[in-house]
Image 1 (tube, rainbow, N blue to C red):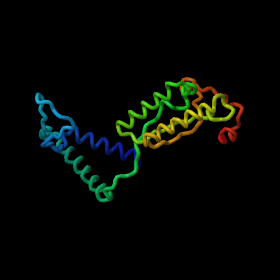
Image 2: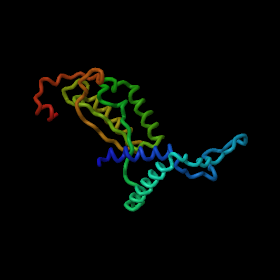
Image 3: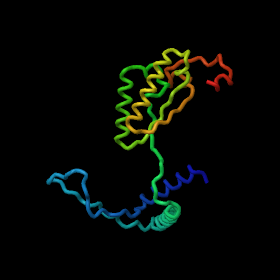
Image 4: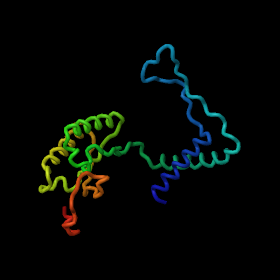
Length: 193
């Protein structure tokens, strides 16, 4: 079974169990992250009502499958967190934007974007550097190189991971402001770029 099918199946199982009233752990006390004004009170989460009789069999079946799956995970996991980094596309610095990247306000927007995604816990970004922007014969190529270097410095200064994607610009002007004529290249020349 493919990973996508497994993930989809687990999502359906999980969502179905929620819809059927899967028990949730009641919170007996609340530790606020900010002080609650005297006019407000913190109340514990209510316990779930009983499962409707017509859904009991479905609930039992789903619960059994989830418990078995959790047991499999628990038996194979050593309790150590992995090194997965959740990232986001740094779309404001995408090479398909062409000369818009070289506007002074773009770098400021990059900084704001990086600050905000770091605030919400994102650990890295993906940066698309489109060909032919860095080709020596492409207009303003040295400015594009300076831009991408500065973006990399901004990413590193926030201790974020950086993944660089490279590929040709989108050919459709709806998706890229960069216009480039690839017709003079053979397939071999194109893939050597």
